[in-house]
Image (cartoon, rainbow, N blue to C red):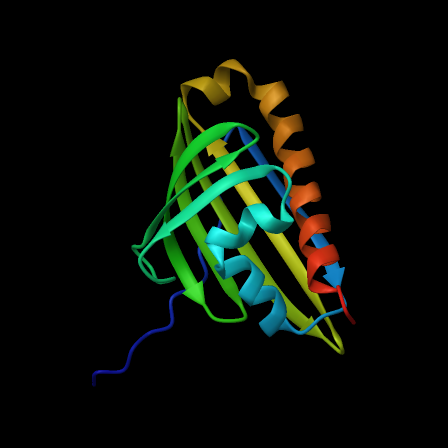
Length: 154
């Protein structure tokens, strides 16, 4: 009795009109990568596509953050926070609902980082092709920026 059930990590909506999943191997400890991902206010310092980011409160499920990615203002809510393993949030922007997840999987001295995101909403249906290209480009760039910053000084 009283045993807590571990919830499976949140995933994106596989039926969303726009979704993407990208992966990179980073030569840095999971702790370093986790610190970069969860220092939301610090994202603009290493991700050139993010011009502003402000977390209200601590990194825990239910906390909200506002940020600007590629010039678009987004309001997000953290959903999954499993240190050094899983980070996930939902977000809203004009005509768009998003689900974004991060997974860190240590493999030897490296960490395989997978990020995935899905978009739904009227604007997504209207501009599906363009938004799919933007999402793929954005996630790949975010992973490369994360890899570059995490591997600095190694």
